[in-house]
Length: 501
Image 1 (cartoon, helix red, strand yellow):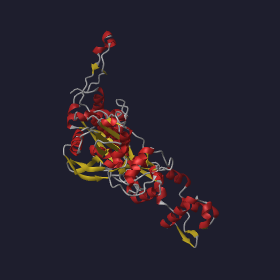
Image 2 (tube, one colour):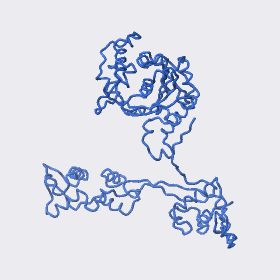
Image 3 (cartoon, one colour):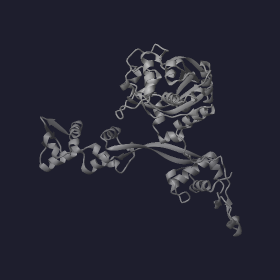
Image 4 (tube, one colour):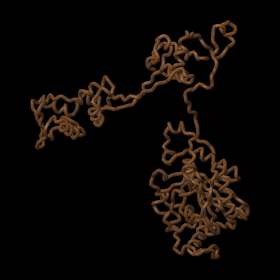
């Protein structure tokens, strides 16, 4: 069996000591190793060759906290009261005078500990000590902890009391040792020769003939190595890139819009009435500054007419909402509640010539809802919105596009069912099937209503859909709590695996 020189050195230590098991701390002090890192790395290699086992035993150790150090140096608050009385030659003190002895924050805890330990009595606002030289087991244990951290040596009840007082801290450490396997014991029965190794043969080695004295190291790519965590994208970023790649591959182009919008663009143009519950403070973040914004006058008139009377350019196309449409509400500024506003502003920006051409666009960006934070809701999350505008597109085309989109994202079982959304009709929700979880709703879609399109001068049908990317990320990563996605814990980010389906 080919062994690395460090593996030979570690086995040589066992061979010379004639021991089967040795602590890592002891092995690291041997001149052949010199560090715990080297010992553990070498032991990992040897364990891969079944020559040693790495034994781990977890132990709890106790140490003084900063407050404990202070208590040891200055004395417990209750002890300082007793020492003060000894100096005064008295066995009692009024509670009101204790602030001459202790800090205000120490007084109430000290009174509690005096009563708990039965050190003193408190009657009519006066503290009476029976014995100013009382013995305190907690003090004795705290002194011992200073020099001996083995928690098993101390009374658990006292340890618990000291921990509650914040005087000690308990930490779990792992003691490691290396133990020879049966195979390892057999191997070290033969003398182990340690010869200097080189990993690269140079010109100098050949010219001076030194190459004859060296052992050229061979490489075993199957040997376990230390884990390396290279730089990588955040899982949420990976989801965004994956969805972008799919949509661009399907012929869509990306559009953007600001995260701060007027209610006109966020709600009014989508034919949501100004008294709709979605606009209240439970769902929408309203801005104090700027608290109002500009809106296009000509389009405002058309949207106002469609809301109030269902009329566009004098033509009746709807019943409307039959209420008084107010400009001051339209001008209020909000954090956008959906990315649909990007699609709407794109359609509104089209020239007359461009309105005669087909369009496929999408937007991926942050949206904001005034939600209570829990395992499936956050006030800020990513959403993806897409639209298709063309002469003859219909609801069947929408279903076909969405099924293809979800299949490219790796979902095999897909179904759609009827749904309701304020600005699309007809509407649907798409669900995907996950083993062990069943059917999960993943996106909503529909065809923009005439009340949305007519004021924009759009005569062609427009298919629209939206998907929550946080939900998609949770499915990709097997998460059940959306908050885990945004905690940015380094240990999780290092180890999490994101696989494109």
